[in-house]
Structures are given as structure tokens and as C-alpha cells.
Length: 533
Image 1 (cartoon, helix red, strand yellow):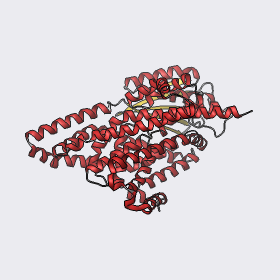
Image 2: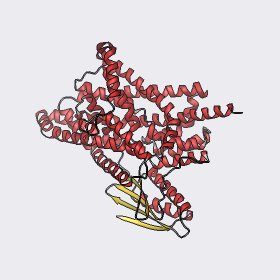
Image 3: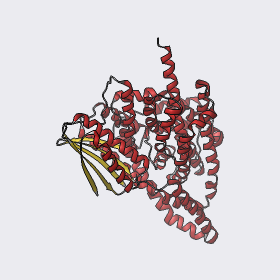
């Protein structure tokens, strides 16, 4: 069903347009953060077009719902005017940075622009509020454990027959289908994350602001994860002496030089994740450079990204049921002890998060002379929101207010860094992917060595940056790592269950990474200003 509204294209229509959007999205039970971003999207489009349009121009605002996907579209008839385009140069640097932040905020969801038959169209895709994944997974987990214990106590033979004849084929089919859509989802989402930027100038500014701090935390998270893996999960087989230093460097060299494929088709046939990411980055940069030159190709890429993202959402919506089936199968097959051992893994992951967070707090004490306790007290409002919701987007308002008013960070740094941080600062995904994968691999009797972990860690580093923030990405990420390590996909149920609950402290650490990065950036800006005569 599609609902339309035609309004005059002028600034006085902003309130009426926002009221219409807010009312309809509340009716469709969208999250408040999505409602806020949708209104921002509408405002930016109207303000941009109003400056270009004639006095009597009008625009059409429409909302369409299909299944659980909602599309918000604005149409304006006139000359081609893309409201998401940022000029390569700007006289007012501060105003330019403010607009960058707003456009990146818009780019967190699927936003497209097209011009056909004299009509400018921008559309924004969002979804209805899903059920809390932690709650549904917890229910599935507890139900599977109790059902498995009952079957083991009452009819153990029947339980094993149900597992082999019914549960195992169902879970194998599900994870096989999930594995099949991993490659296209990864390829199109990586292209889309680059193409959502406005131009190469904006891309350079993003990396200039965030690359140093983000890479430092990424390297720290990778190093701590490897140390934890060596001590608790790799054991004696993880010694570099076993394979020798030559083997280690040979693996690194093979991985680095092998990232460039011999042809375009082979990475998709072979399932080579690193080569696919390389092709996606190159394609995204080329499309960004030629933005607007080939609208048909842009539309194909955008629609393909939306199609596969929708398929992934539908698959992940079934995850609680699959968790129930897989955990029940694990219980009745006599492998329930592995599930109980997951508490050791959870403690290990939490310890890794704690070490990374302490290192970031110490950087504040060393460079900014700020007490860690004083910092945590000032940032408690948005950190508690992140911890309780596992949503970076939910912290936008509180995070922005704290950074501007309490931490006295200049506004264009705040408006730029917070939304971009949601895209780039997901370093806590590295220990989650690495440690959980090794733990599940050990359950299946797979031995790992430290040299063999180097390409896995680098893959986890790339995935932590390349994959967009989206619910249900746990299964998507683990599928890639499991394939690289040769771990049976049936272990995804346990991995995803742990990842869903660990998403809460991980999101808190990721938000803290963004905030401390802003504090350091503000410090460097002030230091450079004091040096100027």
C-alpha cells in the first residue's frame, strides 16, 4: 500500500512533511532512531531542492510498505538535482563538514537517487521494528536446553533418531542457503558502503580524520585477540616454532599478493572472500568517481544490494528457530557439554573487551590528562544506552549532546565523527569472530596454529570495517570465517547465540572508540591552532 502527499517545494513545508513521515512511521512501528533519520533525510532533500526550484514548484512525498520493508520516496519534477551530492570544494569549511556528517547519517541506510523523464527521485529504505534478537534467542536457547534434557531422560534413542533424521537435515539446509548468499551480500554491501559517500574528496576527509585512531584500535584488538587465543585456545599447537618463521611469512605473502584475482569470475566461483572484497572496493571507488555517469548501472547495483539485504534479513529472522533446532540437536547427541563450556568463552571475550577499553582510557590519561573515572562519569548517559540497546544509532542524540556540551568538542567534528564512527568503528568484532571461531573449531576437533591465524585476523580486521551495521550480521560474518577455517557450518548456531549476547558490550566499546577518537581529534586541532601565529 502506497500513501502520497503533494506539498509546495519551500521551507515552510518542512513541518508538514515531517509530521506526515513521523505519523506514518509510528503507524508502521518503526524504531525512533529510524524515524529521526527518515525526517532528516526528508529535510535535507527539501532544503536542497528548494534552493534550486522555481517559486511555484511542488514535490511528492510517498510511503510504501511491502512485507516488513518501508520505502520513503520524494519526487521533484525539474532539472537533474541530486540532494546527496557534495561539491568537491567549499568556501565554508565548517559548513561543509556539517553537511558531510548529515549525509553520512543518511547513508547509514539504503538511500538512492535517480532521474527519469524529468523527475528527480530520492528514496530511503527502512524496516519495521523487529523483535529483540537477544530475547528471542534466549527463549530459543532455554527451550532447546530443557527439551533436550527431557528427551535425554525419557527417550534417548528417539531423541537421537529425531536429531539424525529431522534436525540435522533442516539445519544443514538452512546453513547451506546462508552460505550461498554470503558472497553476493558481501560484494554488494561493500560497494554500497563506498558508493553512499558523496565523492572522493569526502572519502579522503573521512580517512584523514578516522584512519589513525581506528587503525590503532584495530591493531590493538587484533594483538590482544591473538594473545588470548594463544594462551587459552591454541595451546601447544599454536607455537610459531612448529611451522617456523618461513611458513608464517609465506602465508602472509601469499595472502597479500593473492588478494588480486586472475580474473573477475574466479573469486565468486572459489568463494575467495579477500579477493571479492578487493573487487568490491575497486568497483565502489570507480563508481564513486563516475557518480551520475551511468545511472542504469547504479540502479542495478543499488537494487541488487537491497534485494540481497532483504533476503539476508529474512534468513536471519529465522535464526531463533534455527538456534532452537541446532542447540536441541547438540543436546540430544550428547554434545551438551560444549554448550556449558561456552561460559568460558564468554569470560574470555569479555576480558578481551575490558583490556581494549582500559587501553583506550589510558590513552586519555596519557594524552589528555583526563581521569578514566571522570571520563566514564561524563559519558555514562550514552554508554548506558549502548549497553542496554546494542544499538549505536540509539546513542546519536545523547552522544552528540555530551560531546558538544560536556566535552566541548567543536560541532563539525561531532557531526562528522559520530555517524562515520558507526560505519568504521566496530573493532570489538575482531575478538568476537576470532575467539568464537576457534572455540567452535575446537569442539569439532580442529587444531589451529598461530601462523594459520594471521590471515584469519586480517580477514576479521577487514570485515570489522567493511560490513555495515545491521541486525543479524553475526551469522553472515561467521559464515565467512568458518569457510576460511574449514569449520562445519552447523557450529554457526552456537557462534551466533554467543554473538547476539556479546553484541551489547561490543557496541558499548565501539561507541567509546568513536568518542575517544573525537576527544583526541579535538586535542590535535587545538594544539595545531596554538602553534599558529
